[in-house]
Length: 464
Image 1 (tube, rainbow, N blue to C red):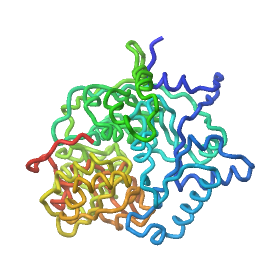
Image 2: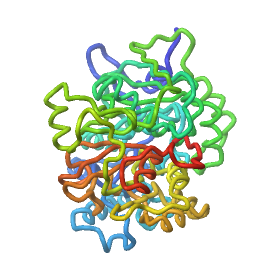
Image 3: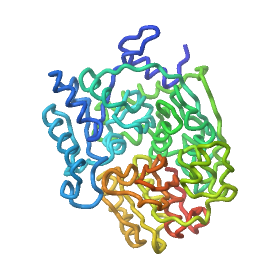
Image 4: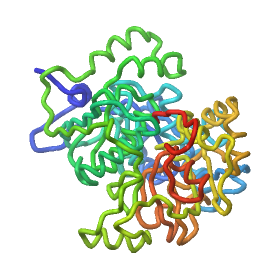
């Protein structure tokens, strides 16, 4: 029987199934951070349970961590407590932890792939909704709640209802100045924030195959914003070249690659749903409202409201329908998050900022996704490009994406952000967020208003 990529990975991990009930699914990699783990570890202690497979568990500090130098000395009381609890619990249970002093520290969905811990065919979970990022490797990866974190710590298994496979095909090739962020925003605008509910998206087509691993991670990262349980890309030579030689890569790498090649969706496999988008017709996208689905091509007019939620979003965002966002003044630009903080993303932003200056009055934060990304960027001199342009070059972390670590957009201010969510107050109380790619964010920083990076001379194409 022909199977999809999702079906192959799911079926290989089912421990037990019973009609009408959730399946018991085995978990290959459990990622942990400081926000959703303290209560889970506390639950284990109350029940006298050990961590079942500490060797399959990896922890990092990212959400509450400051991006200003100083480490714990500049963390607020709540954040410090979370970090201290995580460190203590990991030590008690023998779990590997990338703490603030670790050379591997960073955002959980950046550090696990770059350390080679995420492999094709795996099941990967984390107490964070953007765990779908790891699907870029052909893994089935999704976020879980705190009680589920406790379940996986205790049993290395999880109760899950089987989703359905959903094909997302991008035909053609992206034009210069258009990126994976624009692809996924176009998809979410097409199917809506609930369009993928009950499904796992499999991204396919020429445009997907042409993406770097960073671009594929961006695609899969925002699958959750379309309501999907996860997003996946079948592994190929791009995947195998990325993983080769990384610390967590299998010792028998050639044998692993042979197995991984068999994960591709079979000819004749059936998807429960399918949608096709023309990648060559996609322009840079930017959000105008308070959900990722409320986005348009950068030169397209903001639509007239057709619902109460759209009217509320326009009022909150202080955006006028019937005209493009181009030229709208911005106060803050954030380049970072688990969506767009990898080396490719920073290179894209630097290609716009190189030799230019940030507009007066605009605050720009550039936050690498990990210490490894930071070192690589500095080796290329990207930090000098950002600093000479007037941007702030920060320490790794989630930063302004969720505004729980001291980095936030001031009330009422408008930010162009490379992060993944734009609901009211996401980047700080009263903050207003326009989601966009690193290229668009950097161009807007230079001009001081929403801008199309394609208008900049000597723009280098980046696909992330």
